[in-house]
Each structure stands twice: as structure tokens, then as C-alpha cells.
Image 1: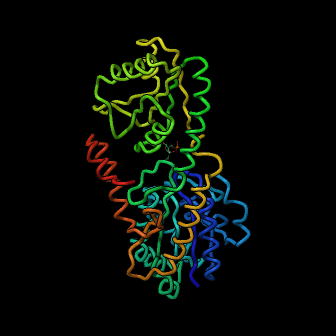
Image 2: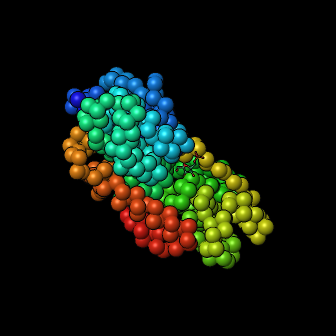
Image 3: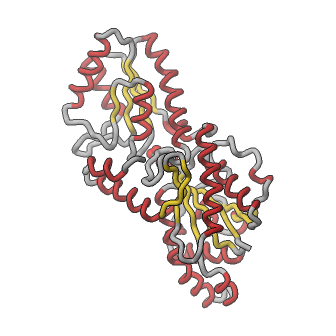
Length: 363
Ligand code: F6P
């Protein structure tokens, strides 16, 4: 009688549906009652139709679909105790004490706080007679497991997050397409790519598209970057290259922390080199479309492992995140990963770039 629920939270990413499907099917296979929570934490607070029992067939034909069929939202109510109290009541009334949260570090931190607060929430619910003493005793421990869905690959503790590989494919398809028209007209293209505070997407895209220059959040260029950039582009053209590709991460900045935008880069190239320079902002195309084969497999493995981890959890076990480590799916203490991820963000905000890179480690 282990009630389990799965929800997606924060920004969507390709492969989330495959993860939802694997959680649901592994749970049914193991004999659990399994629920979807629609619209992330908001659905948990609102209850009603937002929390629905899932069946084997309810997750058919979603493995190939991008986004998340159960919706995702940012939720203010869950930040307040009153919202979390409602959420706890909604779960207890359905016998749900196991949660799989698929999201980024903010969503996983929220789940961990909820778990820590769980017994005091149940005390309050019993006091105000929303739940019975029997319910309080029966459902007194909340287990959570995290899966990281993010195209940015910005979470410490896993080699890859769900959605990154697909986003990379989207970027590369776009750069390949741009390159043929750039070649014809001897143009320079400046591609703005996502990744917020993490340069994984721009750096890998830069390497595999033979870009001439990449602006990354973690490696701000020296203040004389316009000289360096134009020298490099000029050298490439003099060597016979008919096009140039420059990649600008959306979170790029200089060493003082001033943003470096695609438009600034275009202007420098236009004024100094008189190149016909154009900007393409890839935007949410990177987060859309069908998941790649890699992301489908990754999400299936992680989803199944998340359900297994919940079924094996004891009241003493610490919450884990399912990670990829050297092509193995492993369980890693959730808060260790979240703390490291937040330390990276702090180091970046304080412009301690080298520390940020070191802290991030392999991922
Ligand atoms: O974290 C994923 C991400 O796609 C980032 O790369 C990007 O900066 C951000 O989300 C955009 O968020 P939103 O869709 O809320 O504008």
C-alpha cells in the first residue's frame, strides 16, 4: 500500500515524459498505487483533479514527446507554510508518502524542505482535524527522490541531466543549417544559446560546430575581448574561411560581470571588420521537440531507478537524486548535490570563476 506520486517542476526539458512513464510503470509493476500530480507544486497545493491515479495505458505513447504532459509551473503558494499544509493534506488523503520530483535544483530543494517539515505539518493537520490520528501514524514519513530535468546540464553530481543531449542536437542542427547560408554569402553568424549560468551547451556546441569564438558564463574574456575576437575572425578569413560562427551564451559576461550580448558582439564585428554579421537567437527551440534516443534511455533508466529507490527507502534513509556516473545510474545524497550546485552559483555571483568551475567538477 505504498502510494507514490510523480510530478515535474520548473522549466521543462525533453525526456521528462519518458521519466514519468518509467516511474509509473515500475511502480505499477511493483504493485503500488501511482499518481500524477499536474502542474508541479501548484497541483499538489490545489489537489482535486490535479492529482490523478495513473494507469499503465495513461503513459502510453509519451516516450517520444517533448515537454511534460503533466504540466509544470512555478508556485508561490508552496513557498508559504499554508500552501505546504494544503499539499500535505492532499497527499495524506490519497495515501501518498512517496514522491518523485523531476526538476532543477530549486524544485529538489523545495521537496527536501517539505520532507523535513512533514511531521510538523501532520501534527498541525491532526490538531485542526483535517486528518485522523490513525492517518498521522500511518503516513508519518515522506520519502522523496529527485531526477534532474534541465537542458543546461547545470546540476552537480550527475554527468548528464535529462534534456541536455536533445538541446545540444537542436543547437547543432541550427548551426549546421546556418553554416550553409553563411558560407554562400561569406557572412558571420552570432548564435545566442541557452544555459543560463552553465556553459555546457555553448562550449560543446562550439567544439562540435568548429565555431571560431565562444563566450561562456564561467570563462569571462579579458576586457580586450573585442581585439582578440576580431583578430581571430580576421585570421580565419585570411586563411580562406568563407564564414565565421560565434557562439554567445545567454549568461555571458566580462570579468567585471557586465553582460556580453549577441548585439554587442555583432556591433564590434560590423564596425571593426565590416563583416556582414547576423544574429540568430535560438531561444526555446532548444527546449522543444522530441527527446533524442540518449535522453529517452537516460530518462527511462533514471525513472525506473527512482521508483526502486523509493520502495527501498527506510525512515532513516537520506533523500537521493538519481544520477548518471560513468554510464551507471546511481543514487547520490540529494542535499550534497544541491549544496554543491548552489555553491557554484554563489561563486559565479561573486565572480570567483575558477572556483565555480572546480566546484562543478565533472558535470
Ligand atoms: O534552465 C533552463 C532554461 O532553459 C535556461 O537555459 C534559460 O535561461 C531558462 O530556462 C529560460 O527560462 P524561461 O523558460 O522561464 O524563460
